[in-house]
Amino acid sequence: MKIRGIIPAMVTPLNENGINEEGTRKLVRHLIAGGVHGLFILGTNGEFHTLSKEEKIQFAKIVVDEVSGRVPVFAGAGDIATNKVIELVNEFAKIGVDAASIITPYLLKYTDEELIHHYRVITEQTTLPIILYNIPPNTRNFINRHVFSELLKIDSIIGIKDSSGDLENFKGYLELNHREDFSLLMGSDSKILEALQLGADGSVASTANVVTKTDVAIYEQFVAGNIEQARQAQASIDDFREACKCSTIPSGLKYCLRAIGQDVGLPKLPVLDLTKEEKQQVDQVLQKYVQAEGFTLKVEQ
Image (cartoon, rainbow, N blue to C red):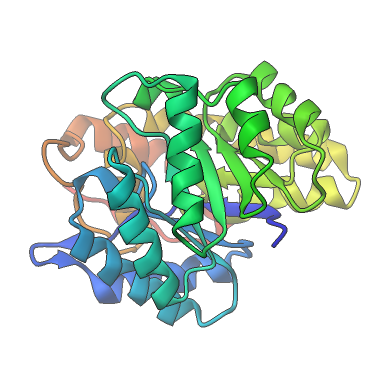
C-alpha cells in the first residue's frame, strides 16, 4: 500500500453517551466530499488517549462502514504497553481498517533498542500494515535515524507520520528510505508544501478537518506542477492554524467544526471548551475561509 495525499487527522465526535455515531458519519461524508485521500482516526486530535478500547473499536467500525471503501482508513492503535497495542491492532484488522498507526510509547523515556523491539514484536503478532507515528514533544520518545533505519527493514511497516516539527529530521527519513512502497507523511501542517518539495508522499493534517479543500489544494496544485498556487494555499492556512492554538488540543478544532455545522461535541475533560472571547476571535478567522470552503458559520454563545 502506497499512501499519498491529504489525510485529515480526524476528530472524534462525542456526545453525553460517548461516540456520536450520526456526527461521525456526517463528518466522514463532509471530509470525503472535500476531496481527501484518506482518513486518519484515533490520533492525537482524535483524543485516542481519553477513549476506552471499546470506544475506539466502536468508532473505527462506524468510520469504516461509512467510508465503504471510498478512501483508506488508518486508525491509531498506540499505547504504552506492547500487548495492548497488539490487541487493538488485531481488533482493527477484523473491522477492516487499512493500516494501524502506532505512536511511540509515552510517559517513560525508552532506549532505542526498546523502541525497536516494541515495534518488531507488534509486527510479529499482527497482520495489518503499520504506520509509525513520531511526535516527540508529546511522548518524550523520538524515532531517530538509527531506530528508523532498523524499522525500515520490516516489510509490514509501510510509512511514518512525522509530527516532530523538525524539517531536518524529516529530511533524514527521506535520505534513509530506500523502499518505493514506504510512505513519508508530514504531520506538521505548516510544512506540508516544504515536505512535498523534499519528496514527501503527503500529509496527515489536523487543519483538513475544517479547511479541507484548501489543504487538498496544496497537494493537488503541487502534483499538477502549479507551485505558486500550492504556495498560496499553504500560506492561506496560517491564520487558521494560529486560531486553533488558542486552546488545548482539540478544543479549538472541535469548536471550528461545530461552527461550520458538524456535530462533533466537546473535547473530553480535562480539556475545556473555548471561552466566549476565544470563540469570537476564532469566528473572525473562520470568516476568511467561507468562500474558499463553501461552509456557513453558526455562531455559538
